[in-house]
Length: 425
Image 1 (cartoon, rainbow, N blue to C red):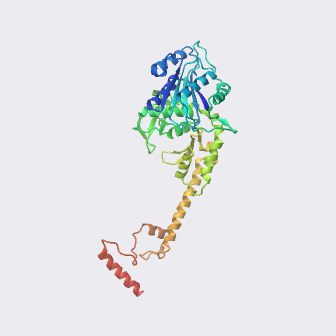
Image 2 (cartoon, helix red, strand yellow):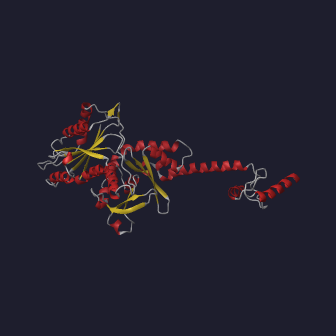
Image 3 (tube, rainbow, N blue to C red):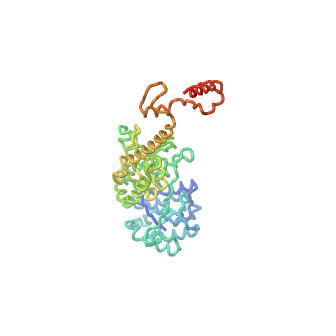
């Protein structure tokens, strides 16, 4: 079992995220602790009101929303009753047994996992200290529960068990409510992905067909740090109505996005070397690798390669989105070998080799014809011009080949003349 604790400032946003999954049919609420009613009897307003009552008791506590994810091995089949008991024991172990919390079972990935929503503000208005809670309490509790419930251990044989990352549904225009689709993607990327610039944030969003736009640099929206979100179509073009960032629950505005840059710089460092290894493997395993092949191969490894282009279509940067570790890196930040300049040089050389092979094959085929540098009109041209002439001019019928139907009468005369001429020669 792997446990992850995230904190925030919007309890309503956390509830809305999980409830949106319930609406989409990819999650179900399975437990409500200290709400006075069973989970089936609770309405959305009851859930929000219970938490907001506590958060208002101490307005000085700004980070008052706690989101916990318990992930299990894909081979484990866990009944809802067992998930409920695991969630209760885990919350007891980290000191949240007296707190209200909601538990949702999510089915949007190929491994079992639950999300728990709670607050660290207690009924007496004091707060539960979240500093080092993961290291000091969560890890100890997690290991105890693995033994108690005979779960697959996250640590074993010297390495951490690899659990497939949670899937994020693609935003596809026309299939679901547009604003809801954008909200699901934006919320998940902000919560889980480690990016250190606006371009990297956008690269992660584009992996799921969503784009964030600040407007032109000389616009009022850009000057006032405005931000809108839109869906992208199959051709990576904006489609539908853009939505203001401030209109979404959780308020994913520019200042909130930028506040994560510095923190994420440190968080993603540990994953840079593994990503570089995968990219190098794909760049060097064959001599004739095209840009499309590189994108396809990295995608199979769980990595999105985003080309950053100018308005004129010139590629000036590469961004790698590693969905396995949820880290986003600008190519040059990984090193010169991963920058747009050097990667494109490798790809261009490969594509030039493919072109050379193609031309060589054509030249081999043209050896059966008379010298292509001498054209029928008596003018002599270079071998390159002769090759182009061969590729683009009208084919000359071969006297030895049968005539095409439909032009039998006309072709017979040409055929006869050629045969006489060849006999005289």
